[in-house]
Image (cartoon, rainbow, N blue to C red; front, side):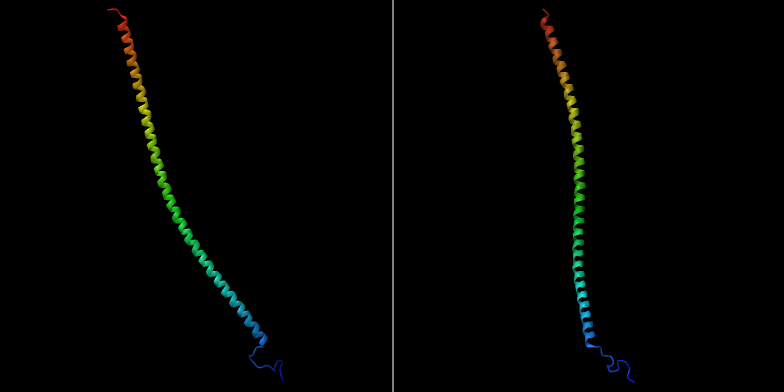
Length: 121
């Protein structure tokens, strides 16, 4: 007795199924190639972003160092300014004291000269 499908030769697929499998393989191969190329582009982009981040970090470090150097200079200049203001204040008070002494001396000369001139000889 001939079984169901006995008229087929063993191991041979129908051509429609074979073509469908080839199409599926082609689609999978295209998707794999597409994903691979996208992955390569993304890896390049990641490498570029990493190098940009390194450059930014180096620039940031330089700016922070320069900022700290400038802040040190600002502090130094502030101290110098405070010292000069203190010197100015001290010299100003000395000048006022000497002006006071000069005024006293002039007053004493004027008073001494008037009394010496006003008195008859």
